[in-house]
Image (cartoon, rainbow, N blue to C red; front, side, top):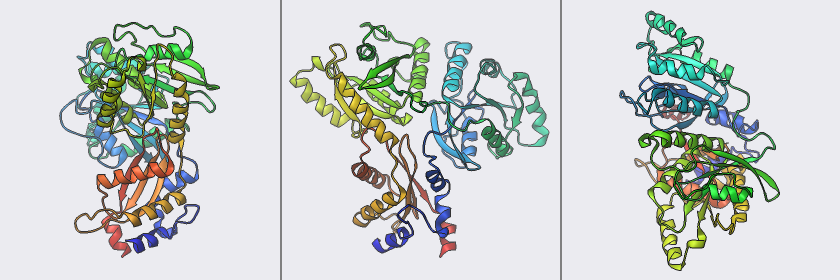
Length: 479
């Protein structure tokens, strides 16, 4: 194993370059690293009512089956992001749940989801089932998006032949411009839509902090955990309404705060009481706005009531943060109410319930008294530093060579997969791609992630490791 790895990695120079023979392995990632393209990329939101083929279109854009597709409405319920590229340009595709007409009023449901897309995306692709035509939901979507300053493209899906293109032309009535006929299932017209997406995407994403601007920090957690109290303490004023009644905050509240000699933009969000798909009324719209605020933030402070057992609600919010890819600080609030017995129980709960995020920075605070809130600043700064960190390709592969020589990947199907090359494809969060000759078990990927964190100090930030297996036909050709 060591000899093979030496041969594979011998081609990696100190500056991370490869010989011509292996350029096909690196693709856009090597180019992106050299050009500094590891930062934020533009976001394209795929929206529309249920069962019009949004996830199928996402898979077509990605060139692989990632999004779950099934011939029933409502399979996609949460917003899921995927890295994509076309003609050498990288961007993020966001697959969304369909707009449900019965979600406490058509107009409200559409407005809330459209607002979310307009706030977080650099381009919006509206998918309509051209074989059905424009429904009342489609018309409501169009009415909201016609006011958007974000570029909007209309895709007439399920156009499998030229004979059906007249059905696409009927969608001009929506007032969203030219409908692009596409068959997401068969790929017809997908390239034209991708070309158009690249035309309207900005060179740099709209979201994220402006150069030199304040870093964005989202305060998230279940209701009545002390988010508004913490914002008021940090701001030194009654910026957010505070009440013992859970759910006082509905809309996100932004505030510029001076801490540690820097200006930070804190966002107080609504407490998430239940799952988005089971929430109703103002809770439903509050949860959408909270998700939007989290998407626009760079680091999340998850507040947990230290005086009470960690709940399912806390873990649900934690899952949302993990899915968003944001840096994370966990603040155990109401520490002034914690006695020795509770501290003992809390330590056991942390080991059991927060095992998914051993990398998260933890701070014990009291928002009401102000105890230790100043400790949040170094924790936030450290988490953001990890979130922004880039490891050079040469350094990464030299480390990888030693790790795999000491602990090779487990056998799979009687063969041992070889890791040919590794590169950091992106930051925010740090994302690594391993090019291999075979599949790497999930347990081994977790092992590599743990050792990667130890070596390069990624405390406070999620780390993503993707594996690209070399095509078997290509392997045979090389032999």
